[in-house]
Length: 320
Image (cartoon, rainbow, N blue to C red; front, side):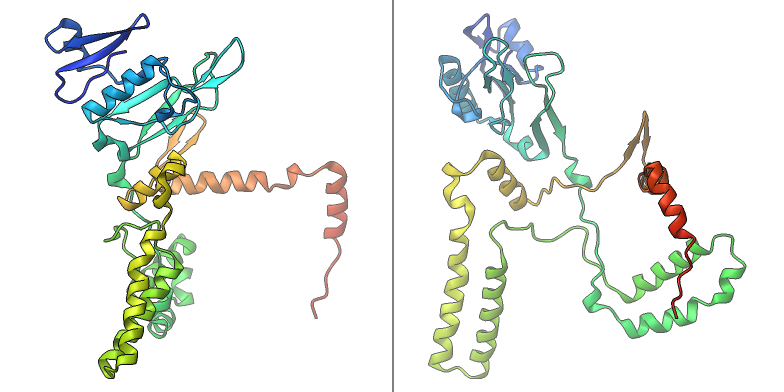
């Protein structure tokens, strides 16, 4: 497997267990440019999850460092030794740093008949990752909402339409859009992993004492304001990134993705029904409803329970 970077002058090809220096002018060096930098390097290094070092691991580490590349591995085991049943990490995926946050890397849980676990490298489609807008119920104009519902949701209008439920949902959603604001699908500021309730409280305290100081600029209030501001500034130093050397690699990269505003928890874009892909919201909703109805159907009950259930359902309840 050959390694290369964007504008390589040389790369390492690990052939037959022997590291060979390859220059860009060589035929093999030219073919390196088009190769995918990932494979079974049989190289051990704690940098990608190995418990030990070996010579190949040092070669790969030096190459990655010199060329300014990134290792996508999260430290998971990628190989099961068929002889002694031990696990190790010898399969490596390497790429340009600009691609690191745009792809997810994981090891498949099934060997699929091999002694190497398949590695799944999946593009996250960050351009399509938008937050689903939520209703800001605390800022809704409920008085206007109630008046519009009384004016536009008349019982007579549902007597002449083909689909009363669809009509009701459409009108109600239209009223909500006019009276209830929504959150943005594209947040202006990426989430910060260290921003917790304590930070939120510190900001509130700082604003409160700032307002009091503007109204009454006394020395006592200025001291309180300075203390609250200092507490807010000092808080980020306590976030988990402070101890990166003892933090699992997966947690570190999750933190980096949050800081960069790249959320891997994208909304589901399709459902798979057998060999068919359902891409429309209506088809997906119908399939989910069908699955729920099937899983909660009485056909799943035992026969003896069905008999008891049928008898009990004949009993009439008196709600008076």
